[in-house]
Image (cartoon, rainbow, N blue to C red):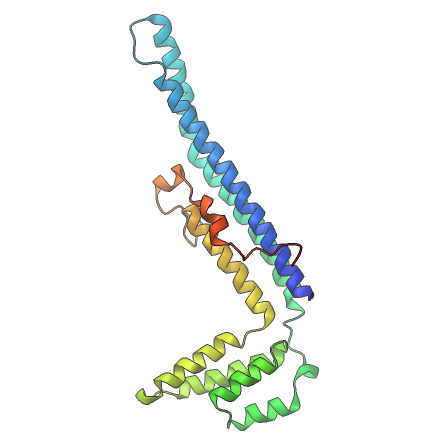
Length: 228
């Protein structure tokens, strides 16, 4: 197994663990709030001095939980983001060597063909497939595909532009694909937690529940196992 794949597997497992921990802690805060509310409800208003005193204590406990609830939940996801950011940095570092452009890796024949500007989209697609593990050649393929895409401005070339755009996307290195896969999973976690791309909750109501129970369904088959 390539080092880049091992690094990706490790990073995704760390993301998975971070999501599950955030979910557990968030639910615990919600349960703490719900428990304080139920405790208050168990002491209805009464003229009885003892009952009234117990209700007052319960109200004070609920107020305390309420006052700290937002901060507690936000801190859970601050810690989550820090953990995931660290895992991503490690992944980027591990993938860096594999995606470094090296002169010795540039195939002379491929370079000559690209520089001739005679390659058609299907030729570029084939070259991207043939050199799928060669970061330097893939960069050249993307560059030529982008040049052709920018030049194909006529209305009748719309299909060609679509094909070239697909080549630009597909001619990514293994490392770039792994990093995008990690980022996509992290984006999914953000959405399920009720937060936007900046890490902020989309509404105050989203503090009161989490959709992270859907995490396993979202990543079904995407979290690599040890036996793969």
